[in-house]
Length: 116
Length: 111
Image 1 (cartoon, one colour):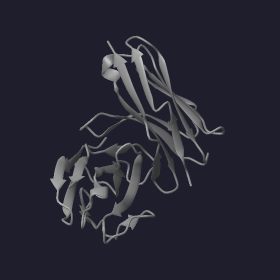
Image 2 (cartoon, chains in turn purple, red):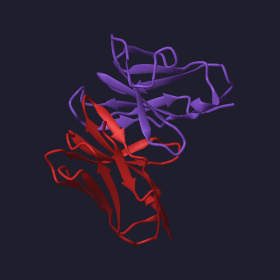
Image 3 (tube, chains in turn red, green):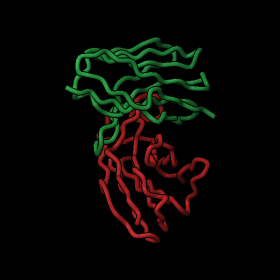
């Protein structure tokens, strides 16, 4: 299993500002994932972050809006840039604990973001 | 593109009832299917994982089945308890570690 700590747990931000969300895992993992869950919607994958390479973004998400860092095998950050009210969502970090083998994905508690 | 649908969207039952949550997916080329539980402020907790070669998995009062060819899975909860109240999410793994989620079933078990 993997224990994931995500910070902050929630935040209220002003339009036009940026917020960086941190994700810390208690073990080394190859792949880390960032998801968004808009109100009343399912989770949508934003990007996959591998250590030592640029993140791979899903259709509809771009690096300028959601820059991601992955400096080592236990840590990643997601920044939500130039925020608007439409960015109000829960953002979740997850990992695939077996390092690429198709195994269970573990999730952090999420960051609940409200943009005014 | 994989799509996952969960029925019903919401369910309210009295304590002690057995219940079934349904999940369907459009592309049967999956690696596995997971059922998660989502509690407010606590993220997602993995309940059961069924590999594509398996038909069912059981954990305590929970039983999940998978019919890959028809694109369906069910989560059976026996003898429901108020502590089971949460949103239940179904997700299928296809492609390269790409999880596709349904919108979930919000379950309320009343004492």
